[in-house]
Amino acid sequence: MSDPTTDGDGPRTDATPEGRRQGGTYRLLFVCSGNTCRSPMAEAITRDILRTRGWEGFEVRSAGAGAFPGSPPSGGAVRAAAARGIDLADHRATLLTRREVEWADLILTMSRSHLMRVSDLGGGGRAALLPAYAEGRETAAETEGIPDPVGSSDREYDKTYERLEELVEKVLLRLEPEARR
Picture 1 (spheres, rainbow, N blue to C red):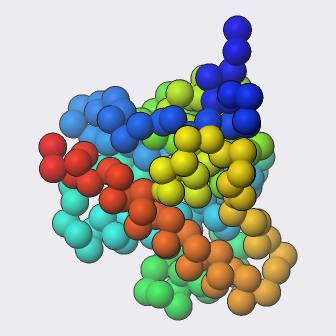
Picture 2 (tube, rainbow, N blue to C red):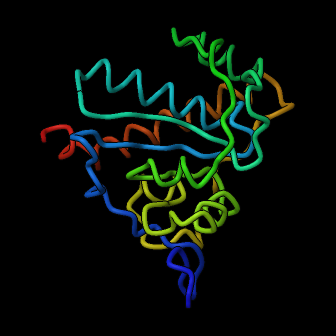
């Protein structure tokens, strides 16, 4: 049987915003490697935008394909978020499991390897590479993921935060019909 997240050109991004609205709530999961930088920043950005817009009916989480559960966020991620009025200090890493995958209506990953892990856990039809999904691309083959800033300068964390913010805005434009339900 073929992998539902790939075609001849690489990982697919055919996850649609018309997901499973469980209990009236649309569930969005961001995935990176350790759940200490990129995915918690994306989660926090999304929550902040949803709050600002007054959109209800969404739940947002993040997880890491190789996370050490309970690990705190990286200092660079905390500082990048704090510079924009968002507090990540209480975040603790969550390992990506089948349970997390089953929970989500839409899973957005930071790299192709994360996308493949989600697929391995049964979420391929509801998953996409974040930049490809945000930009409405059919496949992720030509799309770069979000580079991991771990161990980099605060400037790199700031650039990552800004890129995530831009992509989350585009994702939420696609999900706006869900906000009206």
